[in-house]
Length: 262
Image 1 (cartoon, helix red, strand yellow):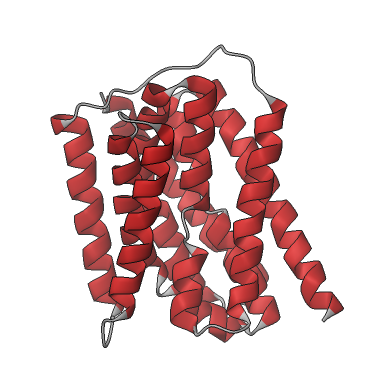
Image 2 (cartoon, rainbow, N blue to C red; image 1 turned 120 degrees about the vertical axis):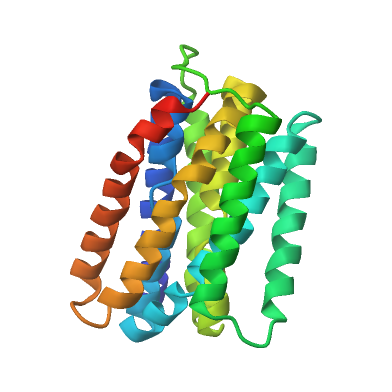
């Protein structure tokens, strides 16, 4: 039991610090590069690593299969958050979280969910929401921000994101692999990023970062599929490293597309 709580604490610190640093980069680099970097695998990385430790690598590999469906839900969550920011930060957060929990409950009622079904829903949601934000609602990218960085915001983000990851690991002790996979993609990064950037840089900058995060989220799906394939073949350590490298390379691959975004 003591080892379990140590792993919870480690996941809390690792995820929290990573997400705090990602916020800093988003503000320093601008909405395009910042959104792409902020959405590299973080919550899912730490969650699945510690799920593999607490349970087994095979269990974590199976849980990873639910990630594309989880990211489809996250895409709609972020789309809702971006649109509702025009009214108020609190309205945006409550609306987006309500959508997330409803959709998570809805997909849990499905009798059988295949990987092709999950990928189909994810890419449909991603393409549609990005198109609407880019060409219909015309959310424009924004460059580097010069406002002073507030360290208390880093602390808040560290606590929030770390708590979500720690809770996911705890849930994995009792939940089945499907719900573990869904909660491993709980939008802690998206929620905390959008909230903090709205407070520190304003709604327009947060919306611009969010648009980039929707497109860049494909790297998380790549990461999850590779985790499923690699954890049971080459182990958790190298499976995590190779999956993360592949996710990062994807961000580099779509750099020309990010540059052309409005």
